[in-house]
Amino acid sequence: MSKKAELIYDGKSYQIPVVEGTENEKALDISRLRAESGLITLDKGFKNTGSTESAITFLNGEEGILRYRGYAIEDLAEKSSFLEVAFLLIYGELPTIEELKDFQERIVHHTLVHEDVKSILDGFPSNAHPMGVLSSLVSSLTAFYPKSLDPNRSKEEVDGTIIRILAKLPTLAAWSYKNRMRQPVVYPNNNLDYCSNFLRMMFGLPTEEFDVNPVVSKALDKLLILHADHEQNCSASTVRIVGSSHASLYASVSAGIAALWGPLHGGANQAVIEMLEAIRKDGGDVSKYVAKAKDKSDPFRLMGFGHRVYKNFDPRATIIKKAADEVLTELGVNDPVLDIAKKLEDIALKDDYFIARGLYPNVDFYSGIIYRALGIPTDMFTVMFALGRLPGWVAQWKEMRENNEPIGRPRQIYTGYSQRVFSDISER
Ligand code: SDX
Image (cartoon, rainbow, N blue to C red; front, side, top):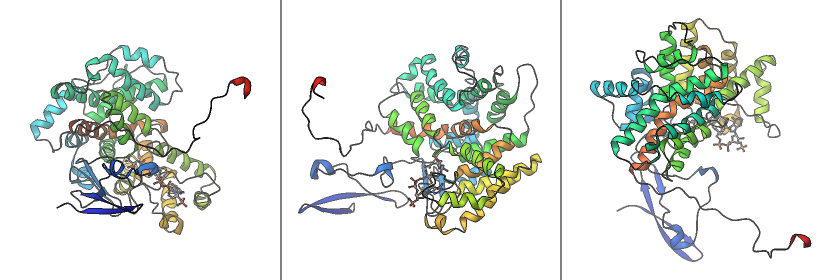
Protein backbone atom coordinates (compact mmCIF):
# COMPACT_ATOMS: atom_id res chain seq x y z
CA MET A 1 0.00 0.00 0.00
CA SER A 2 1.68 3.29 -1.06
CA LYS A 3 1.98 5.97 1.59
CA LYS A 4 -0.14 9.10 1.33
CA ALA A 5 0.19 12.69 2.56
CA GLU A 6 -2.85 14.71 3.58
CA LEU A 7 -3.37 18.28 2.44
CA ILE A 8 -6.05 20.24 4.26
CA TYR A 9 -7.08 23.39 2.41
CA ASP A 10 -10.09 25.58 2.70
CA GLY A 11 -11.77 23.07 5.01
CA LYS A 12 -11.25 20.15 2.61
CA SER A 13 -8.88 17.20 2.90
CA TYR A 14 -6.90 15.85 -0.07
CA GLN A 15 -4.92 12.57 -0.09
CA ILE A 16 -1.65 12.92 -2.04
CA PRO A 17 0.20 9.73 -3.04
CA VAL A 18 3.86 9.50 -1.90
CA VAL A 19 6.30 8.05 -4.45
CA GLU A 20 9.48 6.36 -3.16
CA GLY A 21 12.64 5.74 -5.21
CA THR A 22 15.27 2.99 -5.04
CA GLU A 23 17.39 5.07 -2.65
CA ASN A 24 14.43 5.96 -0.39
CA GLU A 25 13.92 9.41 -1.87
CA LYS A 26 10.29 10.40 -1.42
CA ALA A 27 8.05 12.72 -3.45
CA LEU A 28 4.47 13.92 -3.38
CA ASP A 29 2.84 12.87 -6.65
CA ILE A 30 0.79 16.00 -7.40
CA SER A 31 -0.35 14.91 -10.87
CA ARG A 32 -4.01 15.08 -9.68
CA LEU A 33 -3.64 18.11 -7.39
CA ARG A 34 -5.12 20.78 -9.67
CA ALA A 35 -7.96 18.58 -10.90
CA GLU A 36 -9.00 17.77 -7.32
CA SER A 37 -8.19 20.96 -5.42
CA GLY A 38 -7.71 23.68 -8.05
CA LEU A 39 -4.28 24.29 -6.52
CA ILE A 40 -0.93 24.22 -8.32
CA THR A 41 2.52 24.37 -6.69
CA LEU A 42 5.07 27.16 -7.18
CA ASP A 43 8.81 26.41 -6.91
CA LYS A 44 11.06 28.88 -8.80
CA GLY A 45 14.17 27.11 -10.07
CA PHE A 46 12.54 23.75 -9.24
CA LYS A 47 14.58 23.59 -6.01
CA ASN A 48 12.07 21.18 -4.43
CA THR A 49 10.43 19.74 -7.55
CA GLY A 50 11.15 16.47 -9.31
CA SER A 51 10.49 16.57 -13.06
CA THR A 52 10.70 12.85 -13.74
CA GLU A 53 11.62 9.39 -12.47
CA SER A 54 14.98 8.26 -13.81
CA ALA A 55 17.19 5.17 -13.56
CA ILE A 56 20.34 6.79 -14.98
CA THR A 57 22.18 8.71 -12.24
CA PHE A 58 21.81 8.88 -8.48
CA LEU A 59 23.34 11.59 -6.36
CA ASN A 60 23.05 12.34 -2.68
CA GLY A 61 24.01 15.95 -1.96
CA GLU A 62 24.27 15.51 1.79
CA GLU A 63 26.61 12.50 1.57
CA GLY A 64 28.49 13.50 -1.59
CA ILE A 65 27.43 10.36 -3.48
CA LEU A 66 27.37 10.17 -7.31
CA ARG A 67 26.62 6.90 -9.17
CA TYR A 68 26.02 6.23 -12.87
CA ARG A 69 23.60 3.30 -13.21
CA GLY A 70 24.58 2.24 -9.68
CA TYR A 71 28.36 2.39 -10.16
CA ALA A 72 30.30 4.82 -7.91
CA ILE A 73 31.94 7.72 -9.74
CA GLU A 74 35.18 7.01 -7.84
CA ASP A 75 35.38 3.51 -9.38
CA LEU A 76 34.41 4.65 -12.87
CA ALA A 77 36.93 7.52 -12.83
CA GLU A 78 39.75 5.19 -11.75
CA LYS A 79 38.91 1.96 -13.60
CA SER A 80 36.73 2.76 -16.61
CA SER A 81 37.06 4.68 -19.89
CA PHE A 82 34.87 7.46 -21.25
CA LEU A 83 33.38 5.34 -24.06
CA GLU A 84 32.68 2.49 -21.62
CA VAL A 85 30.87 4.99 -19.34
CA ALA A 86 29.01 6.44 -22.33
CA PHE A 87 27.77 2.93 -23.20
CA LEU A 88 26.76 2.36 -19.55
CA LEU A 89 24.79 5.61 -19.33
CA ILE A 90 23.03 5.21 -22.68
CA TYR A 91 22.28 1.46 -22.70
CA GLY A 92 22.09 0.84 -18.94
CA GLU A 93 24.80 -1.81 -18.48
CA LEU A 94 28.60 -1.93 -18.64
CA PRO A 95 29.55 -3.37 -22.05
CA THR A 96 31.22 -6.73 -22.64
CA ILE A 97 34.54 -6.71 -24.51
CA GLU A 98 32.67 -7.45 -27.75
CA GLU A 99 30.00 -4.81 -27.12
CA LEU A 100 32.60 -2.12 -26.38
CA LYS A 101 34.60 -3.07 -29.48
CA ASP A 102 31.47 -2.85 -31.64
CA PHE A 103 30.49 0.48 -30.03
CA GLN A 104 33.95 1.94 -30.68
CA GLU A 105 33.93 0.61 -34.26
CA ARG A 106 30.54 2.15 -35.00
CA ILE A 107 31.66 5.50 -33.55
CA VAL A 108 34.95 5.47 -35.48
CA HIS A 109 33.09 5.14 -38.78
CA HIS A 110 31.05 8.30 -38.16
CA THR A 111 33.65 10.83 -36.96
CA LEU A 112 33.70 12.69 -40.30
CA VAL A 113 31.22 15.51 -40.86
CA HIS A 114 29.77 16.67 -44.20
CA GLU A 115 32.15 18.96 -46.10
CA ASP A 116 29.43 21.65 -46.15
CA VAL A 117 29.91 22.04 -42.37
CA LYS A 118 33.09 23.92 -43.25
CA SER A 119 31.01 26.50 -45.16
CA ILE A 120 28.85 27.01 -42.05
CA LEU A 121 32.00 27.24 -39.92
CA ASP A 122 33.51 29.83 -42.28
CA GLY A 123 30.45 32.02 -41.66
CA PHE A 124 31.52 32.58 -38.02
CA PRO A 125 33.94 35.40 -37.18
CA SER A 126 37.11 34.24 -35.42
CA ASN A 127 35.97 35.89 -32.18
CA ALA A 128 32.84 33.70 -32.05
CA HIS A 129 32.70 31.84 -28.70
CA PRO A 130 33.19 28.11 -29.41
CA MET A 131 30.04 27.23 -27.44
CA GLY A 132 27.90 29.32 -29.78
CA VAL A 133 29.60 27.74 -32.79
CA LEU A 134 29.18 24.23 -31.36
CA SER A 135 25.50 24.67 -30.58
CA SER A 136 24.91 25.91 -34.15
CA LEU A 137 26.93 23.13 -35.77
CA VAL A 138 25.08 20.45 -33.77
CA SER A 139 21.76 21.93 -34.85
CA SER A 140 23.01 21.93 -38.47
CA LEU A 141 23.33 18.12 -38.31
CA THR A 142 19.53 18.00 -38.75
CA ALA A 143 20.12 19.36 -42.28
CA PHE A 144 22.62 16.64 -43.17
CA TYR A 145 20.64 13.84 -41.50
CA PRO A 146 16.97 14.76 -42.10
CA LYS A 147 15.77 11.32 -40.93
CA SER A 148 17.08 12.25 -37.46
CA LEU A 149 14.30 14.88 -37.30
CA ASP A 150 11.80 12.13 -36.47
CA PRO A 151 12.54 10.67 -33.01
CA ASN A 152 9.79 8.09 -33.55
CA ARG A 153 11.68 6.14 -36.20
CA SER A 154 12.86 2.57 -35.59
CA LYS A 155 15.10 1.74 -32.61
CA GLU A 156 17.95 1.01 -35.04
CA GLU A 157 17.58 4.39 -36.78
CA VAL A 158 17.42 6.28 -33.45
CA ASP A 159 20.53 4.37 -32.33
CA GLY A 160 22.25 5.43 -35.54
CA THR A 161 21.40 9.05 -34.71
CA ILE A 162 22.92 8.52 -31.24
CA ILE A 163 26.12 7.00 -32.63
CA ARG A 164 26.52 9.89 -35.10
CA ILE A 165 26.35 12.62 -32.45
CA LEU A 166 28.76 10.73 -30.16
CA ALA A 167 31.15 10.35 -33.11
CA LYS A 168 30.84 13.84 -34.54
CA LEU A 169 30.80 16.08 -31.45
CA PRO A 170 34.61 15.82 -30.95
CA THR A 171 35.11 16.78 -34.61
CA LEU A 172 32.69 19.72 -34.36
CA ALA A 173 34.23 20.80 -31.04
CA ALA A 174 37.78 20.73 -32.42
CA TRP A 175 36.65 22.59 -35.56
CA SER A 176 34.96 25.25 -33.38
CA TYR A 177 38.42 25.84 -31.88
CA LYS A 178 40.10 25.89 -35.30
CA ASN A 179 37.63 28.61 -36.31
CA ARG A 180 38.77 30.60 -33.25
CA MET A 181 42.40 30.18 -34.27
CA ARG A 182 41.66 30.80 -37.97
CA GLN A 183 43.57 27.59 -38.65
CA PRO A 184 42.65 24.91 -41.21
CA VAL A 185 40.61 22.09 -39.77
CA VAL A 186 42.19 18.68 -39.08
CA TYR A 187 40.23 15.61 -40.13
CA PRO A 188 39.70 12.72 -37.69
CA ASN A 189 42.26 9.90 -37.65
CA ASN A 190 40.32 6.76 -36.91
CA ASN A 191 43.36 4.84 -35.72
CA LEU A 192 43.38 6.95 -32.57
CA ASP A 193 41.28 6.54 -29.42
CA TYR A 194 38.44 9.00 -28.72
CA CYS A 195 40.41 11.53 -26.67
CA SER A 196 43.64 11.29 -28.71
CA ASN A 197 41.66 11.84 -31.92
CA PHE A 198 40.06 14.95 -30.41
CA LEU A 199 43.37 16.34 -29.14
CA ARG A 200 44.98 15.82 -32.54
CA MET A 201 42.08 17.59 -34.30
CA MET A 202 42.38 20.42 -31.75
CA PHE A 203 46.15 20.97 -31.67
CA GLY A 204 47.40 19.29 -34.83
CA LEU A 205 47.83 20.84 -38.28
CA PRO A 206 46.96 19.17 -41.59
CA THR A 207 50.57 19.54 -42.74
CA GLU A 208 52.28 18.03 -39.69
CA GLU A 209 52.43 14.84 -37.68
CA PHE A 210 51.04 15.31 -34.16
CA ASP A 211 51.98 13.02 -31.29
CA VAL A 212 49.41 13.00 -28.50
CA ASN A 213 50.91 12.97 -24.98
CA PRO A 214 49.37 9.88 -23.29
CA VAL A 215 49.30 11.74 -19.96
CA VAL A 216 47.14 14.43 -21.55
CA SER A 217 44.84 11.93 -23.27
CA LYS A 218 44.37 9.88 -20.08
CA ALA A 219 43.66 12.99 -17.99
CA LEU A 220 41.10 14.17 -20.53
CA ASP A 221 39.42 10.76 -20.54
CA LYS A 222 39.03 10.94 -16.74
CA LEU A 223 37.65 14.49 -16.92
CA LEU A 224 35.07 13.44 -19.52
CA ILE A 225 33.96 10.54 -17.26
CA LEU A 226 33.51 12.94 -14.34
CA HIS A 227 31.31 15.22 -16.45
CA ALA A 228 29.30 12.49 -18.19
CA ASP A 229 25.96 12.89 -16.39
CA HIS A 230 24.46 14.60 -13.36
CA GLU A 231 20.73 13.72 -13.26
CA GLN A 232 18.32 16.65 -13.78
CA ASN A 233 20.80 19.56 -13.96
CA CYS A 234 19.90 22.68 -15.96
CA SER A 235 21.22 21.45 -19.33
CA ALA A 236 19.89 17.88 -18.97
CA SER A 237 16.47 19.29 -18.05
CA THR A 238 16.71 21.51 -21.14
CA VAL A 239 17.48 18.49 -23.34
CA ARG A 240 14.52 16.64 -21.83
CA ILE A 241 12.02 19.46 -22.20
CA VAL A 242 13.07 20.23 -25.79
CA GLY A 243 12.93 16.50 -26.59
CA SER A 244 9.51 16.20 -24.91
CA SER A 245 8.01 18.17 -27.83
CA HIS A 246 9.33 15.35 -30.07
CA ALA A 247 12.08 17.64 -31.38
CA SER A 248 15.08 15.70 -32.66
CA LEU A 249 18.04 14.55 -30.55
CA TYR A 250 20.30 17.02 -32.38
CA ALA A 251 17.95 19.96 -31.70
CA SER A 252 17.70 18.87 -28.04
CA VAL A 253 21.49 18.56 -27.62
CA SER A 254 21.99 21.93 -29.34
CA ALA A 255 19.65 23.46 -26.73
CA GLY A 256 21.51 21.62 -23.95
CA ILE A 257 24.80 23.16 -25.12
CA ALA A 258 23.20 26.61 -24.96
CA ALA A 259 21.97 25.98 -21.39
CA LEU A 260 25.37 24.63 -20.30
CA TRP A 261 27.05 27.82 -21.61
CA GLY A 262 25.71 29.94 -18.75
CA PRO A 263 28.28 30.95 -16.07
CA LEU A 264 26.04 29.60 -13.31
CA HIS A 265 26.20 26.16 -14.95
CA GLY A 266 28.91 24.74 -17.21
CA GLY A 267 30.28 28.19 -18.05
CA ALA A 268 31.55 28.34 -14.46
CA ASN A 269 34.75 26.46 -15.37
CA GLN A 270 35.76 29.35 -17.65
CA ALA A 271 34.60 31.90 -15.03
CA VAL A 272 36.69 30.17 -12.32
CA ILE A 273 39.94 30.56 -14.22
CA GLU A 274 39.08 34.17 -15.12
CA MET A 275 38.37 34.80 -11.42
CA LEU A 276 41.62 33.12 -10.27
CA GLU A 277 43.61 35.07 -12.86
CA ALA A 278 41.98 38.33 -11.67
CA ILE A 279 42.92 37.49 -8.06
CA ARG A 280 46.49 36.69 -9.14
CA LYS A 281 46.80 39.98 -11.09
CA ASP A 282 45.37 41.80 -8.07
CA GLY A 283 48.21 40.53 -5.88
CA GLY A 284 46.73 37.17 -4.82
CA ASP A 285 44.86 38.48 -1.76
CA VAL A 286 42.26 35.70 -1.54
CA SER A 287 40.77 37.07 1.72
CA LYS A 288 39.69 40.21 -0.14
CA TYR A 289 37.74 38.09 -2.63
CA VAL A 290 36.22 35.87 0.04
CA ALA A 291 34.94 39.06 1.67
CA LYS A 292 33.56 40.30 -1.67
CA ALA A 293 31.74 36.95 -2.15
CA LYS A 294 30.08 37.38 1.26
CA ASP A 295 29.15 41.03 0.70
CA LYS A 296 25.51 41.14 -0.41
CA SER A 297 26.02 44.56 -1.98
CA ASP A 298 28.75 43.10 -4.19
CA PRO A 299 27.59 41.00 -7.19
CA PHE A 300 30.86 39.01 -7.03
CA ARG A 301 30.40 35.30 -6.47
CA LEU A 302 33.09 32.71 -5.79
CA MET A 303 32.81 30.88 -9.10
CA GLY A 304 33.23 27.12 -8.79
CA PHE A 305 31.72 27.24 -5.31
CA GLY A 306 28.28 26.12 -4.27
CA HIS A 307 25.84 23.66 -5.76
CA ARG A 308 22.09 23.18 -5.90
CA VAL A 309 22.37 19.60 -4.63
CA TYR A 310 25.81 19.02 -3.04
CA LYS A 311 25.78 20.69 0.39
CA ASN A 312 28.87 18.98 1.80
CA PHE A 313 31.24 18.22 -1.01
CA ASP A 314 31.07 17.48 -4.73
CA PRO A 315 32.76 14.06 -5.12
CA ARG A 316 33.92 15.07 -8.57
CA ALA A 317 35.78 18.09 -7.17
CA THR A 318 37.62 15.80 -4.75
CA ILE A 319 38.78 13.55 -7.62
CA ILE A 320 39.65 16.48 -9.91
CA LYS A 321 41.65 18.26 -7.20
CA LYS A 322 43.79 15.12 -6.76
CA ALA A 323 44.11 14.72 -10.54
CA ALA A 324 45.17 18.37 -10.88
CA ASP A 325 48.17 17.78 -8.62
CA GLU A 326 49.05 14.55 -10.46
CA VAL A 327 48.68 15.93 -14.01
CA LEU A 328 50.57 19.18 -13.34
CA THR A 329 53.39 17.20 -11.72
CA GLU A 330 53.51 14.67 -14.59
CA LEU A 331 53.54 17.49 -17.14
CA GLY A 332 56.01 19.57 -15.11
CA VAL A 333 53.55 22.48 -15.10
CA ASN A 334 53.70 24.99 -12.28
CA ASP A 335 50.51 27.05 -12.41
CA PRO A 336 50.30 29.81 -9.76
CA VAL A 337 46.50 29.84 -9.94
CA LEU A 338 46.45 26.29 -8.49
CA ASP A 339 47.96 27.62 -5.28
CA ILE A 340 45.46 30.50 -5.27
CA ALA A 341 42.60 28.00 -5.74
CA LYS A 342 43.82 25.90 -2.81
CA LYS A 343 44.19 29.01 -0.57
CA LEU A 344 40.68 30.13 -1.58
CA GLU A 345 39.29 26.69 -0.72
CA ASP A 346 41.10 26.62 2.64
CA ILE A 347 39.76 30.02 3.71
CA ALA A 348 36.23 29.44 2.44
CA LEU A 349 35.88 26.02 4.08
CA LYS A 350 36.66 27.59 7.48
CA ASP A 351 34.33 30.55 6.98
CA ASP A 352 30.88 30.45 8.61
CA TYR A 353 29.23 32.15 5.61
CA PHE A 354 30.21 29.27 3.33
CA ILE A 355 29.71 26.54 5.93
CA ALA A 356 26.23 27.83 6.84
CA ARG A 357 25.20 27.80 3.18
CA GLY A 358 26.82 24.50 2.31
CA LEU A 359 29.11 26.17 -0.23
CA TYR A 360 31.98 23.88 -1.26
CA PRO A 361 34.09 23.58 -4.40
CA ASN A 362 32.08 22.02 -7.22
CA VAL A 363 33.14 20.18 -10.36
CA ASP A 364 34.13 23.44 -12.04
CA PHE A 365 36.50 24.72 -9.36
CA TYR A 366 39.60 22.71 -10.28
CA SER A 367 38.74 21.36 -13.74
CA GLY A 368 39.89 24.51 -15.54
CA ILE A 369 43.34 24.19 -13.95
CA ILE A 370 43.76 20.78 -15.56
CA TYR A 371 42.36 21.91 -18.91
CA ARG A 372 44.85 24.78 -18.87
CA ALA A 373 47.71 22.40 -18.10
CA LEU A 374 46.57 20.25 -21.04
CA GLY A 375 46.95 23.34 -23.25
CA ILE A 376 43.22 23.86 -23.72
CA PRO A 377 42.34 27.58 -24.02
CA THR A 378 39.93 29.10 -21.48
CA ASP A 379 36.98 29.68 -23.78
CA MET A 380 37.13 26.00 -24.79
CA PHE A 381 36.65 24.81 -21.20
CA THR A 382 32.85 24.68 -21.42
CA VAL A 383 33.14 22.90 -24.77
CA MET A 384 35.07 20.21 -22.88
CA PHE A 385 32.22 20.07 -20.37
CA ALA A 386 29.78 19.58 -23.29
CA LEU A 387 31.95 16.78 -24.73
CA GLY A 388 31.84 15.01 -21.37
CA ARG A 389 28.11 15.63 -20.76
CA LEU A 390 26.99 14.43 -24.18
CA PRO A 391 26.36 10.76 -23.20
CA GLY A 392 24.36 11.98 -20.21
CA TRP A 393 22.21 14.22 -22.38
CA VAL A 394 21.71 11.34 -24.84
CA ALA A 395 20.78 8.93 -22.03
CA GLN A 396 18.31 11.41 -20.49
CA TRP A 397 16.71 12.15 -23.89
CA LYS A 398 16.50 8.41 -24.72
CA GLU A 399 14.93 7.57 -21.33
CA MET A 400 12.38 10.39 -21.68
CA ARG A 401 11.42 9.17 -25.18
CA GLU A 402 11.29 5.47 -24.23
CA ASN A 403 9.09 6.31 -21.24
CA ASN A 404 6.84 8.25 -23.64
CA GLU A 405 6.81 11.21 -21.24
CA PRO A 406 4.34 14.04 -21.96
CA ILE A 407 5.42 17.42 -23.36
CA GLY A 408 6.88 19.59 -20.61
CA ARG A 409 4.56 22.55 -20.03
CA PRO A 410 4.66 24.04 -16.48
CA ARG A 411 1.83 26.17 -15.06
CA GLN A 412 2.26 29.69 -13.59
CA ILE A 413 0.74 32.13 -11.14
CA TYR A 414 -0.36 35.21 -13.11
CA THR A 415 0.50 38.55 -11.46
CA GLY A 416 -0.30 41.00 -14.27
CA TYR A 417 -3.28 43.33 -14.88
CA SER A 418 -6.85 42.08 -14.61
CA GLN A 419 -8.96 42.70 -17.74
CA ARG A 420 -8.66 46.23 -19.17
CA VAL A 421 -10.61 48.04 -21.91
CA PHE A 422 -8.57 48.70 -25.08
CA SER A 423 -8.14 52.44 -25.77
CA ASP A 424 -7.37 53.95 -29.15
CA ILE A 425 -3.86 55.41 -29.46
CA SER A 426 -5.37 58.89 -29.89
CA GLU A 427 -6.79 58.58 -26.38
CA ARG A 428 -3.57 57.39 -24.56
C1 SDX B 1 27.37 23.00 -12.37
O1 SDX B 1 23.00 21.09 -11.17
C2 SDX B 1 24.09 20.47 -11.45
O2 SDX B 1 24.22 19.31 -11.20
C3 SDX B 1 25.14 21.33 -12.14
C4 SDX B 1 26.49 20.65 -12.36
C5 SDX B 1 26.39 19.51 -13.36
O3 SDX B 1 27.25 18.61 -13.31
O4 SDX B 1 25.54 19.57 -14.26
O5 SDX B 1 27.00 20.14 -11.14
C6 SDX B 1 27.50 21.63 -12.94
O6 SDX B 1 26.67 23.81 -12.90
C7 SDX B 1 28.10 23.32 -11.08
C8 SDX B 1 27.80 24.77 -10.56
C9 SDX B 1 28.69 25.74 -11.31
N1 SDX B 1 28.34 27.14 -10.97
C10 SDX B 1 29.13 27.92 -10.23
O7 SDX B 1 30.17 27.55 -9.71
C11 SDX B 1 28.64 29.37 -10.09
C12 SDX B 1 28.73 29.82 -8.64
N2 SDX B 1 27.75 29.07 -7.84
C13 SDX B 1 26.47 29.65 -7.69
O8 SDX B 1 26.04 30.67 -8.48
C14 SDX B 1 25.43 28.77 -7.01
O9 SDX B 1 26.04 28.14 -5.95
C15 SDX B 1 24.70 27.75 -7.88
C16 SDX B 1 24.13 28.38 -9.09
C17 SDX B 1 25.64 26.66 -8.27
C18 SDX B 1 23.59 27.16 -7.04
O10 SDX B 1 22.72 28.17 -6.75
P1 SDX B 1 21.37 27.95 -5.90
O11 SDX B 1 21.22 26.50 -5.50
O12 SDX B 1 20.25 28.59 -6.65
O13 SDX B 1 21.68 28.69 -4.56
P2 SDX B 1 21.47 30.25 -4.36
O14 SDX B 1 21.99 31.02 -5.53
O15 SDX B 1 20.07 30.48 -3.93
O16 SDX B 1 22.48 30.52 -3.11
C19 SDX B 1 22.11 30.17 -1.79
C20 SDX B 1 22.92 31.12 -0.90
C21 SDX B 1 22.69 32.59 -1.28
O17 SDX B 1 22.96 33.36 -0.11
P3 SDX B 1 21.69 33.83 0.83
O18 SDX B 1 20.68 34.52 -0.09
O19 SDX B 1 21.14 32.52 1.44
O20 SDX B 1 22.30 34.75 1.85
O21 SDX B 1 24.34 30.89 -1.11
C22 SDX B 1 24.92 32.06 -1.68
C23 SDX B 1 23.80 32.88 -2.26
O22 SDX B 1 24.15 34.26 -2.29
N3 SDX B 1 25.84 31.57 -2.71
C24 SDX B 1 27.06 32.06 -2.94
C25 SDX B 1 27.59 31.26 -3.97
N4 SDX B 1 26.71 30.33 -4.34
C26 SDX B 1 25.62 30.53 -3.57
N5 SDX B 1 27.74 33.08 -2.36
C27 SDX B 1 28.98 33.30 -2.83
N6 SDX B 1 29.58 32.58 -3.83
C28 SDX B 1 28.91 31.56 -4.41
N7 SDX B 1 29.48 30.84 -5.40
